[in-house]
Image (tube, rainbow, N blue to C red; front, side):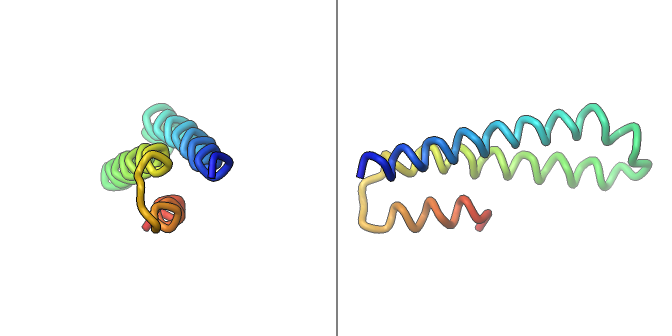
Length: 79
């Protein structure tokens, strides 16, 4: 059970790191390459959802319940 909790924390941390990287790309590189403001807003929204799912992954190990691992898998998949 402890290894499962560690797994969700590691996956949440990696996901959070990649969301920060995606946000950095979106704020620094995307405006130089994308002319349409719609795509920049779309990227920002996607990055925000990614960050929320990453936080939820980090919380999953601390939720008691028989289906918390299923919730973690769904958050990892982006559902």
